[in-house]
Image (cartoon, rainbow, N blue to C red; front, top):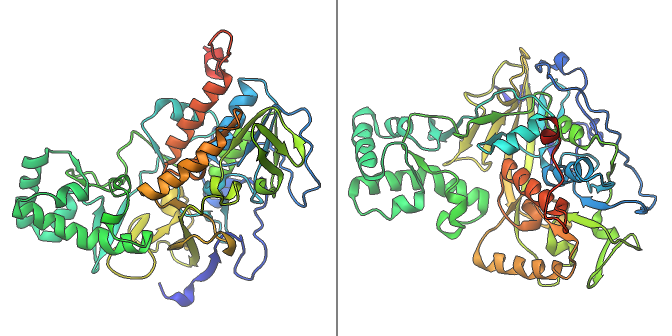
Length: 461
């Protein structure tokens, strides 16, 4: 695993390859001939989506019933619902040169399907969300496993019974497991903050070990502060898990789209009622300067507007900027079968990067003699430095600031902010889709009768 064997590609949002050339996977690109790259064949047909990008010649919103800003999961779901169930003409505007949002993926030069903006593993227990997305993709059945490299001992994350034995030794580990189970119950998930409040010395021993070796340095790298300074909902995402289950998620539905996320999003947008325009920065064409009046590229628009971007930037940071964490990604390709033991390894006590992900685990590709990894580096988001915002920095002050921007949007009854950036929330993909479906239901409710337009699935039954 010598660095001399690898090809390094730094991608911080610019989509450039090792030699500085533009990424060949452009707007609306999909993954034809996926079997040539070791991907299993899907049982869902390919997308015929045609995406218009390039220099912006101006927008004509005449004839559109709705405008959706953002072609990630939130915007795409709502666009499809409005077009398919509501019969509405929808214009989707995407700032980047491609669809898919942060879930965008493409096949690299080595034939590995990589996630440009970091690893995305779909998981859910929401049957409506799973059934809905399964209309557009098959799933590869991958269950994510993560290890923490703690001084060259690799512990399952979340920290569980297996981790306990590895960290404390078999005998002491069993003693601590018994104590934890007696206190919290077998199978319980205990947040690190709750565990640190326990007075029992044995429980305190576990809490201190997990805090120091799994949370503290990793959180400092990822969030720029200590675990006690960030919102409890964030630390609760990785609890101490009193189980032998070493999967990162326990949801019944897990995996990646068989042909990738870009193809999935492309199939969702492939509808005669949907037009997609990439390379359009909504902040330059969307005017909310007059209360109650929405203008798009100078044209008054009376239809529905769904917005998935940051609200502070849309309103010119009127009340100040909302902080986010951004990421740098360093991709490396190695001429060997495997690079590491699991799909993702977190570096919780060493290194300046937070984690390494090896994509072949996630995609389940059969590509002998080659593999691609990505190292992630977290940093504060600087909007004028060409960075992408990824994680909202949640605390009472910033949530209150976001609330001021939400109040501004309420002057526009047909303007609907949704998604991780617009709502300033740390959502998983399934929650994003669930929220988008719920908003679609509200938008499609007949104001006179209170009934909703039927879903395609209900029409078929």
